[in-house]
Image (cartoon, rainbow, N blue to C red; front, side, top):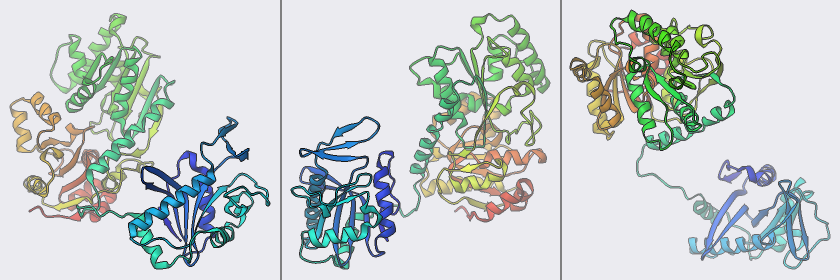
Length: 559
């Protein structure tokens, strides 16, 4: 059977229409066309036909569906529903169906330039109400009413109504029906011949991400939570939203991360708030320095000495300087000693509010031991785990490249999107080839500020220039200004994203950390991912899953 639309999206209040639709679809002949929610504008009046039946060789039937219990007293129609008793219907369902039928008949005649002369009747359907067999009223013989009992075999009732009560002089011809269907379907061919629109996909991804707020609402009574999810699950958005909720409630909140780029992003997100803001936003070490603890040197100082000094300072810190709640994004980047020191800055270290947003497969800094890390021990062991399994920020084709890294419950939801592109290159030449990809993508029409080029080992020369000039603040300011293309390293791009990412696999400093770095790099693109590198190197570093995914990618040579 031809249905318009093929699978209607029934709302919560259309359960009766859904039930009747499914019944008619099951019993009407295969050559019948069944349409749902047909909107017609006739003059200034607007009409909607709940169900419209086109029966070749027979005719048409416009059916108005009323759920609940329906009754008519003294010419006034009433309907029950929602547990609120009976309520009056503004218009008789019979008159409603009749006027919508006439509106459609007039509209389709104007559209086709040929009057509709086929038999056409209006009907009402009360799927949960029984109507007496001998019931009738002016303008509506019993044959035009489908009730609960008639729905056991509605096909014959509809055919009988069309043939005995329908206006018109002839059966519906298949050729005229096809002309009607063409108008009803209203197919639109886009000017752009691409079968996917990146901007629409990303807008939908944003919409899906905001729906994740249900997790925050459902867990609002839990004071200490570890939100665990794969790349693209919206954890950063959730962290910012949680900070907003707690700050508005008057609590003193700290919103933390490790990377400078992510810290600047969090500050940018909060800068537009008109109401209360977190007391601190940014990197853990910047917070420590803001309290007067000196900025030392060497990894041992930052990993051990600095958190020890913070913990000592927190012991004597006035309560008004401590936090009611701490929120940590990319929490797997925080070493256990940092956690201990940060929790000491809570007004109630053992019971205060703690919300960690983390990906336990993305321990790129090896704070906890790598991809097999167990975060259920140590300073975060008392945090209740809440799993965020759906990937919302990447297209499905992109998500397929890093699915093997993201865990067993990883579920892509971000739309099909453009195919991933793979550019075969030697490791030594990958940087030059990736630069060519940047130029080619801009020539294709991608805006430069949509694109990021990320390396896995040595920096791109433009990135290196910022580093040598010690212009890190300028570097990240330029990125967040979204004015031009961006060049970075996968480790500095955690938690960030762009529409297009060119992942330049130009080697790895430590082979055992390659899987985590690939996971980060592959998951930063929202609409288009271009992977540049040696397929053998990628297979060895990323495993069988990545190898198979890249075989499905589009082989590409930049112009």
